[in-house]
Length: 355
Image 1 (tube, rainbow, N blue to C red):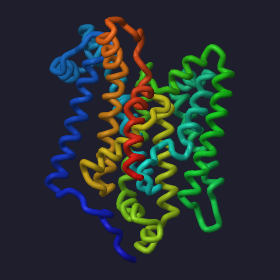
Image 2: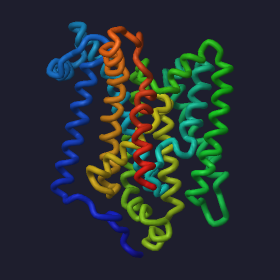
Image 3: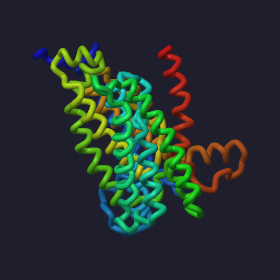
Image 4: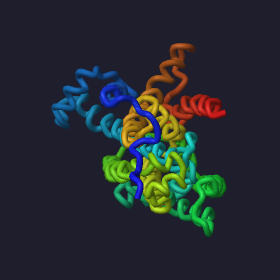
């Protein structure tokens, strides 16, 4: 058996890579603290935020209540969901050998959205300790994955190009089904639409815990596959000659990635482009070795999600007020709208780059 290569191409030197990784960690931490200070009401200075975090949840004053009870769960939503989308996006881009792949490439988001919407319409969310939406989203995402795999299955195995095409077909089918579910929801239609566009409100600690329970082992499993993803990124036949089992690798990455992405969708809705952009930034900073860039994608995804949610809460309404002198938005924008506004130009740039 030939040894699997550590990296498909050159990477930055170890010293510069460690420094870059440290900078990503510090940026993520800084974004987290600033996000806790922003909120949708009064600004809390970073120093005071750190002070309140070290105090713990005392309830001694309004600032402590705001930081711990309101803003901390919201910030954790961003950190965990952004990390999930970044990690899965990086793994999927390696598996599909496509720089435009993201966690929702094979219809996972549509299946998860249908499952989550059904849970909310039937009132299962509150009945299941506010875990009904993410749990049914996971079920919907897995069912959509099984359908895609069944459609893409061939005698010679599962071809990745066919898998992508099957994912597009299933995604369109499930999107139509989701529209029917929304029309049948009656008065809940607006609430469902806002959730589907991406929302970090309301916050429930139970959902933060389930995202953490998915992110930690899921990232570990995908990181364990990163050595094989390095070989697979060169080519499937080349990886097979090096001793990689393509079938096992595909199943592992697709199943774990689907569970992780569906959990994020079930918690904050379908946030597009973040899982596409974060891996590219990580590879630019840390190199193309997926053992490094996979973890870097988690940090970048968390930072981007924190920044997008901060803009949704305060940034864009403040810009509108600065230009017009009027409060154009009474409430914060859905975070998915912000990621789409920022991610669409990035996608156009990537398409131009791959011409």
